[in-house]
Length: 170
Image (tube, rainbow, N blue to C red; front, side, top):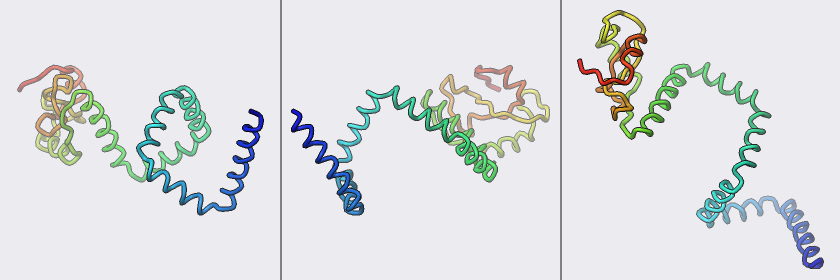
């Protein structure tokens, strides 16, 4: 047993030094292996992730805490350069998540939302006052409604809160 262990250590040391001396060749060999064994590698990765959930969670949390400042800076810089995209992505991602839960369509764009507000004269559909409008689903997502231009109306925040998740036919 000791001879076997010694042989393994010697071989591992040899392979480490070989990879250092033949770096480009090792890269090609590794890439070729990954291309040929993609499915097998993805299965083994999934099994590893499943069996080492807690360790991975701790590792990723530690990495995030070490890099939190640079991540925050990068995100803030992107947000400052792309305020319109930030708003659109935030809304779309929220709606997509909600739609996945209920299983409906999601295709309302910012341009369509602006068109709806313009068509309503920037007035609340329920009370008729000119106030900042929020998107209200005529048939709520929780009742199977979709996030489409046909199912959205502009309501002021107070009317939207009062309506809640009721189906309002007007």
